[in-house]
Amino acid sequence: MAMTRPLAGITVISLEQAIAAPFCTRQLADLGARVIKIERPGPGDFARAYDTRVRGLSSHFVWTNRSKESLTLDVKAPGATPVMEGLLARADVLVQNLAPGAAARLGLDYETLSARYPRLIVCDISGYGGDGPYRDKKAYDLLVQSESGFVSVTGTAEEGVKAGASVADIAAGMYAYSNILAALIERGQTGRGKRIDVSMLESMVEWMSFPMYYAFDGAEPPPRAGAAHATIYPYGPFPTGDGKTVMLGLQNEREWSVFCKTVLGEPALATHAAFATNSLRSANRAQLRARIVEAFSHMTAEQVVQRLEEAKIANANVNTMADVWHHPQLAARERWRTVASPVGEIPALLPPGLTDARMDPIPAVGQHTDAILAEIGCSAAQVAQLHADGVV
Image (cartoon, rainbow, N blue to C red; front, side, top):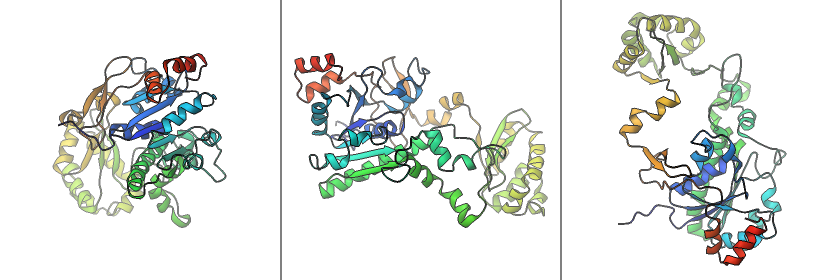
């Protein structure tokens, strides 16, 4: 029996660049949607040039653009209008993360489109949202990490730092993705599309709810604690006698007691006046850390992990990227696949929760332009003229 994925038959047109919108639409493609990615003629999505780390391709682009069709189109050119109309007439969803105000100037906002295409779902992804005093402010991942307060609670006591991954882009892409899925369900009930307005700032502030509530009503925010937990201790990285590092985390007093007995071999430490509660351990973490580091200095990382496992204390390796590529759990669960690309096959991780995701090729710039133009009714002569005029 042929496999039918949940979004088979859904067509998504995406005026996308960088990470947030491409990450959203790649996940729609994972579920079987047809995603037509509109790129600038020539260089295409500027994320293609971020780096050349994947056999000449950009790491960001490889991650967020498999299973899509690439159509080059200068959306500002007069000749682009009939092409866009042909695409939108067949589309279920339009996604865009152009510069602030650009979609409206092109007549590609929901208010303009909904009269002609009442079933169309339009998802706008921006830095700060479609209105308000920050509406036209430029936004990049690092800037939104900072604006949302993330940098203020991340890093060491001396310096705030950004996350090592594009978390603001990822957050916005995830909320766009989930809102589009909800809108498709809603359209099935009402028969009408809708506008979705997702901002990177609001997405990140939602993720910041714990530190915000911790600092509620003027209270002190959680302190920056490096790779350790800001308010629970011991919870973080500790060196071992063989020069390695083990990450561990305690959640309650029962675990603290068994940690002292089984891992440290100091059962009396559990009731020490300076460490008897989590609040005391967190307040006196420098003193407690010294005791733990001393105990671990006589053991290898493997021995520490063995004791932590015996005590049923949560722990993890501090893996490098090379370690993650070869992680035994991912291999055991058969989470790796390969996808085709302009430079050959590339490994790709199955999306979380899915075992039958669509894993089609990463497109070259404009790879599907002529085929898509023919599909919407352009003759061979018209296609040639669009190329000659630089529209596609």
